[in-house]
Image: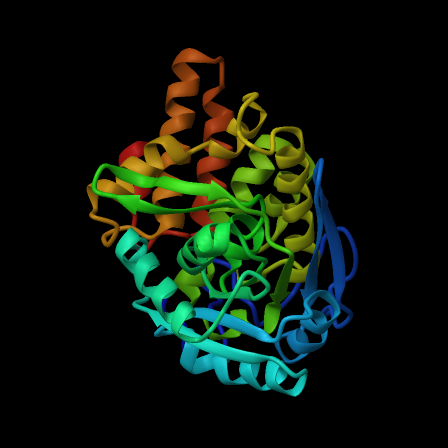
Length: 342
């Protein structure tokens, strides 16, 4: 994911980060942080949401880990922007972090890269008492979580997502993994993080199109679990974005509630979260994981699922149109590809 130093602004298309509007409260910019807890059968972990959280990572890590060695896994786009700030906080707290970077690409999610990361951790002296920090978008969250799951048969993992999509979706739920030639995430493990830190300041470095990828997952959550949020999204005007901290927290709560009912994806409850992903993953693979970003593919997958639901499950054309229109306003794609499915 291509981060850069800019503030997302667009008054004509999509939502952006320079203004905040919350139909459930005031239109003021949120300044206070918040948190929520993901509660599972045998584990609970906190998700911290706010601004300026990167510089606090050392304090939070010190409360949880006695061992001083840790690995920061990031990509070559994100690391130059945030790794030094993270490293400074960890060193100040008494830790000895090692930075390991991989190319910023879905094609980096391979067992070959996992082996290279593990080699770097071994060389740095990390042991079973050490921990891993994933600093990046969904690719980094998936591969760093998988490394943490298998290194010394499992060590703790902190997720620091740097995209809206990763904050509202992939950093929650414990699914980790890598791709193979035959498909996406076919090799993986359930390994929940010890802590998730959502610093909304980092979203200011995202180009608008990549920031908007997150709204594909947000709209998906609204469709499957929160009609009130869907109606609220319909009321937001183009050129505005809802109060981010509150929106992120609500989406985390939706996903956490579903995951808690079916942590290991066995009963079918968690399949709700796959809405749009069956066709979406096929689109990603057909584009060799380069032509389409995840939010683009998911949006097209949602529209395709709506078309199937009209024929097979009684979805009305008006309901389909409401979903398509909301996706158009959020604009998670780079061009008008969605019209081919409508």
